[in-house]
Length: 111
Length: 114
Image 1 (cartoon, rainbow over the protein chains, first blue to last red):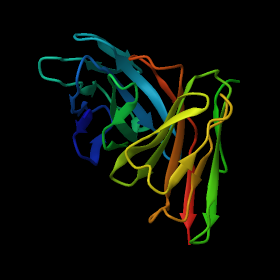
Image 2 (cartoon, chains in turn red, green; image 1 turned 180 degrees about the horizontal axis):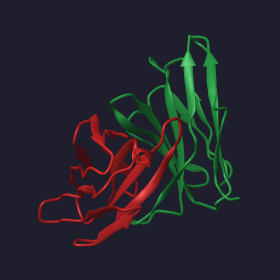
Image 3 (cartoon, rainbow over the protein chains, first blue to last red; image 1 turned 45 degrees about the horizontal axis):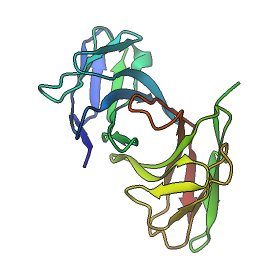
Image 4 (cartoon, rainbow over the protein chains, first blue to last red; image 1 turned 135 degrees about the horizontal axis):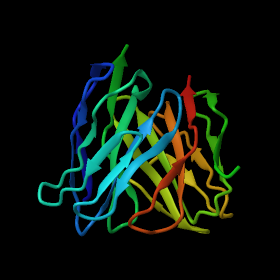
């Protein structure tokens, strides 16, 4: 079945550091890929998405590129802020039209 | 404002009791979902519904039941058969069965069974 694997956390960084969260997937067909973010005590919000190979999703300084050859969708941000502290989820939507999520990566940014 | 509303935010129940979690959306979305979130395990799909009066089991449906009598509403019942019901429950909706569908999430209900 479809699945998503993302790097385990927690990840702790200083402000203005570079952030990368790795995400790889297994799916039949051509899935759409997403990054969702969850702030403490809240539901998830869409951060960015990509619907076909080589697409780059971007939002709030975060970027991720859909790499079909490596089945990856790594999340990056060049300079993190304390407000970026959250749990980040990689997800895919494939042929059966439901979302499959990774386990989540907790990111803490220190001032 | 359009959105998805879950209630209550916190819920306490005694062991052996059934409990129903509410989820309402005014986004005119066809599809709705229930996920369970446990620490370190991410989100696991309980049930989903792509259209009114139809729903499918997700990966961990045992001990749960749902109904979809109205487009706007997708309540989840946690039955006494669910062995470990204490968790954070998230409801979501999406515009339909499209590959590039974005899901919109509620704020969640934290259920504690004592």
